[in-house]
Image (cartoon, rainbow, N blue to C red; front, side, top):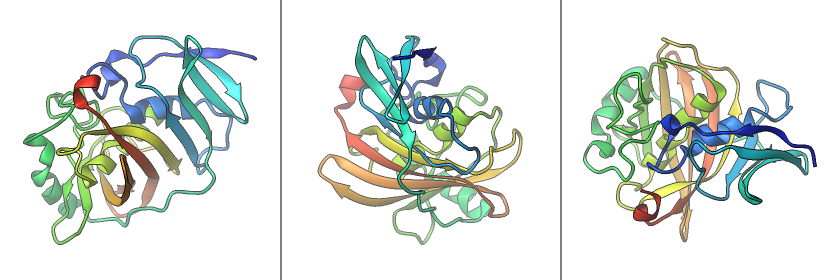
Length: 236
């Protein structure tokens, strides 16, 4: 089977301290699919914690791609069966208010996470702090002004807000599957709103969604997730 250029997750893009940010890793693999862009939804399933600074073998498989280490599948990407259903937008001011209630400032299972870790400095992590929207039930939001833009970073931005719509502070979870449709890449220095909501639970699985909007309500990207409850100590 033909191998492609290996995929390496730099340490900078970690989620848990010893493994790759799920959204960034998923986006880096999804970006390699030869699909129409923009507007084509892609599903990525993470089978193992993505190792850091370790080249993963990437090979075509059943119309998609597989990233593996020593023959063990780490992630699989394929065209999605259906588009994600967007989370309704909230205003920039409502998102700014919501992020003042970000639970991760009090208790965070992975405080140095690239997307949502409060231990990250400005310009080091995305610092997307999605908090409960006033008057809503199970909806969170945050503002985001990108300092750098790429497909993997956009996937990362739409990763953790889904988790914070649930009880990730009380029941630590990691990303298992993410389906994302990217309509327009965000622009460095522009102001955006990220919204997330919980859509159900089943045993160790939690189902959530997130969407990225322009400051005036135009949809940029939307995603759905499956999260898996974990023992935080096993992920660091």
